[in-house]
Image (cartoon, rainbow, N blue to C red; front, side, top):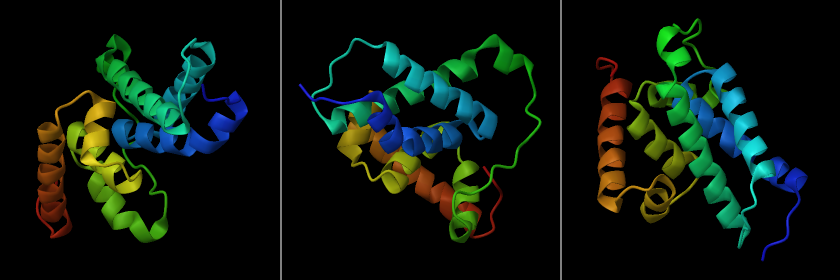
Length: 156
């Protein structure tokens, strides 16, 4: 079994969890809440991890699940967000990041995991419990929509 401390895991993976939550929720406040919930769940889990990659994949899966739960909650459905603008993580990527944030959630998640986190199609399929064909389709459609947005077409 892989030996780890919660502090080490948090230090290594908090940015990944936060960026994915931000990409899925489009809200800093929601992303911060999801990030806290994910690391709280890590501390409460009795699960044993085989490797560093196993931990990272687990954190990503839990992040996706928490964001889905957030979108399905009655509170979320009744409230209108006050803030639509989410700052880009890097200024030079601003236009592209803004375009990615305009994508529907399934495309945004696939694009984020592939291009920002460096996961392969197979890994994304495993993490999201999807078929590889579904991930390939989401990436392809997401890239097409990004191209439309970046070429000045109508936002999604």
